Structures are given as C-alpha cells and as structure tokens.
Length: 144
Length: 144
View (cartoon, rainbow over the protein chains, first blue to last red):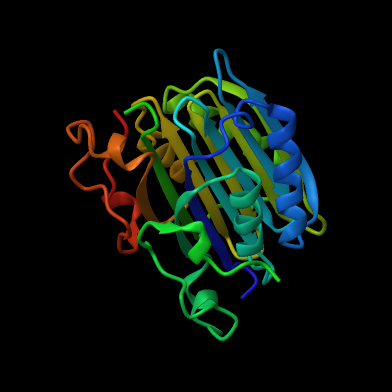
C-alpha cells in the first residue's frame, strides 16, 4: 500500500477577509497545517497576486498541501494530499479555524495503484467519500 | 464565475521507469504541461527523495499543478487545477505522453463558490464528472 494516499479537497467559505491577502500569514498557517498532519516539509512556494489573493504549495515527504485565496469573495480552496498512512483531516480542521471559515465543503479521494488501494482498507475512515454535502465547520469533529 | 476552477486529478500507470526518478526531467515536463494549458508560471518547488521518487508543484497565476512519482511502481499522481477558464486537459494529455504512461485514471472536479459554479455552465465540458473508469490513454482525445 505504499502508493496509497488520502487526498482531502476543501472549499472554505466566509473566511476572515483580513487574513486572505496576507501571504506570510497564509504561509505560516500552511506550515502549521503540515505539522498538524505529522508531515515533514521539504519545500514551499508562495505568491501574492495583484491586486489581491495568495497561492501557495507546501511539498512534504508525504505528498503536498496547496492553497488559493480569493479575499474579495472570502473563499479559499485547499488540498491536503498525504501518503504514508497520515490522516489529512487535522490539517483541514486547523485551517478551517485559522482562516475563520464559517462554512466549508470537503471531499476525500483515495489515490494510488488500485491493487494497493484495495490491499488493506482497515486504515481508511468509514466516511471517506467522493463528495460530501456542504457542512458547517461546527459539525466536523475537532482534532484531538 | 471568477472563483470557478477545474481540478483534474490523474493517476498514470505503467510509466517510463527511467524518467520517474529524474527531477530535472520531471520539472521540465511540468513546466511544459503548464504551458500546454496556457498558464503563467509564478513559482515552483521540486524535490528528489532518497532512495527514489520525485515530488513537485508549479504555482501558476491560475492555481497550480502537482506531481508525485513512484519509480518502483511505475506510478505517477498528477493534479492540474486551473481557474480563469483554462482547460486542464491538454496538460493531462501532454504528461501522459511525456511519462510514457500506458494506462491512466482521471477525474475532474469543479472548484469554487457554489453560486459562481452555477452561474454559467456553458463553458464546462459535458463529460466533467466526479470519477471516471480506468481508461487507456489511446481513448483520450489528443490535444489539438
């Protein structure tokens, strides 16, 4: 199962507008999200756009995280792709709180070779699904 | 519809083993894939792991591309996330050929604010779907 990964895809809505254009704050929170999932950071790239918006990626030993912000819309798109048995959800929960999101939409996709993904499903949360409904952050289990 | 993005998620199988551990070749092909979709590159991060494997991301003005390779398995995971009306599929087709993949699995997800995604569906290919079956590369339309 070495190729198996969990790819969490999140849309955060109604975020804290003051933060979404602050590239250093976004970079810091993405590093903290990587730490929250237990990942090892090997590199990053962050960019602030004109007139506004931030994009960035963090390459980890276990795949990557990415973020794109739309300050004018209070919207943020996040990906957290983890291999090696790491759970991406603590990173999602951390970022939802850090970004001040009041709503989100999240889905999780299994990546990898089909024979690896089928090899052992016991590590996989029962609620991994292709697409979830829009949920409020308060309904999502908090990280321990 | 400014927040709307197309996120193409691809698994490439049975790739050219000689290339998957060559970080400069992978980086060059990822830049070429960004060009193939008409994107503007603003930064990148690539890393070669020990004993083998390459991970990398390319941040573009229109979101990002990412790649992770498993040379020992001939497997490559690719994401191409494009905003601004760009079509990610020419990048997918380019990489499939460049990596020498003989099989792949691909899905495309719509990102963005729900009200933007619903605003105008005319730009969206009819076959955008959450999950496709495994297909051979020869059945995928070639880039013009």
